[in-house]
Image (cartoon, rainbow, N blue to C red; front, side):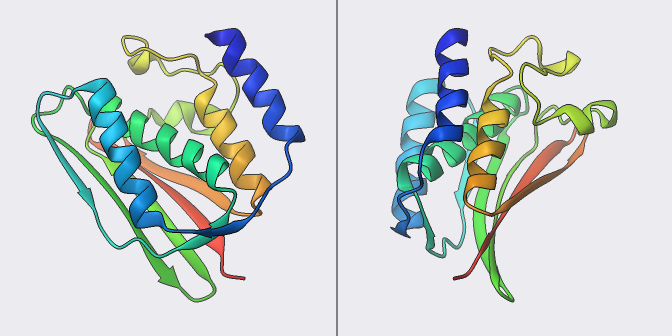
Length: 167
């Protein structure tokens, strides 16, 4: 699986974007179904708020949100109930999506390494993962000339933000 992830990471850098309008409501509801079916969380409140459409490569954008939502569900699985929320807002000349959870959070000492290959936090070692997912997410986001960042508090959860320019 690790080798597959690395190959995928390197392919993302060479793949051209085939941008088209994306129905984010449809996309996010499908990802929600798939992630919940795969992870089978015991107790979860999963909310999808507003979902303004964006322009992008639907395969790549699907991968971005699948990874972020999968992480949110996975890392909040020990909270009762776990809470995951995905929503988008239109602000000035951008659409900002957020994926939030009430999970384990990210230690401030790891903030500068979150998007690096093979970097996993000490409090995440009990959860399955390769340390490649967020590096792929960052690469895809940058290919779309978008921005990604996060806010987190250890033991309280994390919010990832992605800002897409409105063309």
